[in-house]
Length: 261
Image 1 (cartoon, rainbow, N blue to C red):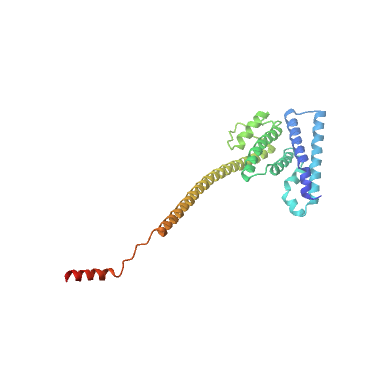
Image 2: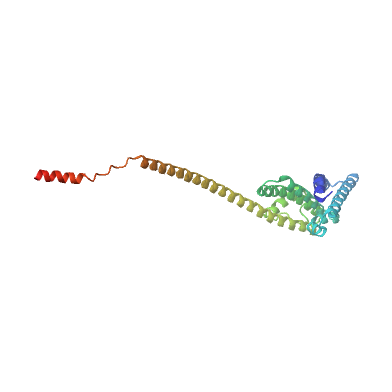
């Protein structure tokens, strides 16, 4: 068993666990269960945390360069060692992004578009849940319902920021900063993707025009070669003019002399 085989074997189960976590987190934030429901949700979240912890340890042990792997997977370490901070639990959803990367394939532009669309929807929904969870119990907060939190997330990620809803807690402001940075990055990705698409279309049109021009030049070259060969064949089959006889001038002279005599 190597690292690649382990990742292929566990990518779908981990993606399912991430989706299950999102469902449980959404249910707990929106319904605020108490009693046995709350305990079941906490146990389920703990089981998911253990699953991600086992996956992290196994991949660390299977990595050939463990130090390099550890340094390049710090976000997964945060998923494992910071389960007590509820907003940071949402980092588990990065598993879905990595699975999406391996599943989409195709051209780079297609992957970027898929990332932008899926990432935006997931980011807005998750940020709305996290903001509602952080601000709902704040005495001075004005985000008290999921529609308000969703409106705030959309206005923030699009860098509009009306200001009618704003976080007041430290956790809510940290979530807002992350969403602002993500919104700026998202606008950059969308702009770059659109520019790349336009450049690609212009290049395709130029290639088509060049192909047509080259085809016309090839046809003209063939026609010119055909005309040359036809002219050459006509020149070789034309009869050569008969040379004048050398005796004609002397005979004419003789006739002239006789006539004069």
